Length: 329
Image 1 (cartoon, rainbow, N blue to C red):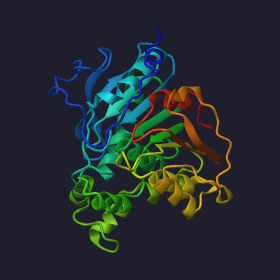
Image 2: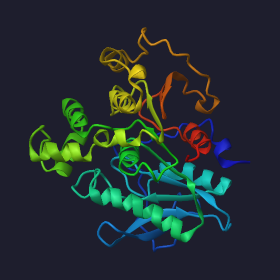
Image 3: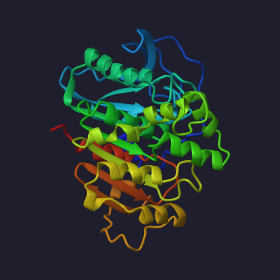
């Protein structure tokens, strides 16, 4: 039985607050506990600073061209985050290559959180996979949730010609706005952003400039020719840590003007935890969502936004089925 199908009724939540505890790193090439045995811990050279960076990696033995799935860990996690294992299992079952890089670990220091090191680490992870295996350049996919969703949107804008498609779940798109949202709730992410940006990211200050430089919204318009799916649970920001305005504003950047959501509609989504009455889009039935019913979906140009019945979580099954249907033009 396909392992992902067997798990299809399980919700795989991606926490932005902490990585699942795992044992200390084992020697390169060895299995990491709670990851499939086929997936190995490796190190690859990063062109950012000529350092060796860790990742979890799998490639099937076949010499035929194969898709590559790059998965990105959440805000406070690292490359050993075990909530990524459903993606690895899919790749094992479907003959895809898989890599899950560290990209400098938790987003609480200047080297992490959308830095140039982060960007080059992720690009170098792709280079490593392409060197080690016969990767189909038309089918290189990127997915992440929470902080991984943020990094997915960032990389969509920073390297739009590389990916066949990008799937972002409950993402942060504007670092400065998320700082303010987190500070109001007294969440630790505000302090993380201060540590990454060098202080309170007030607009017009050096820290504010850093926040803008590290924000996905700064680059996202460059991804207009790229297939992008952006997804959020309707209750995120209430029972989760990232208000869904972060998702909806990212959608607006990539959507045609006539298809964008208004400020009032976005505010209604966020405050009421409901779809605004003014939004008349036909709601599709998506069997891959299981009990996480799609409440709102809109497609425009190459972007699709989905708001589902859920909180701060990523859903591997709908993400993977959507990615599988995409191929680079």
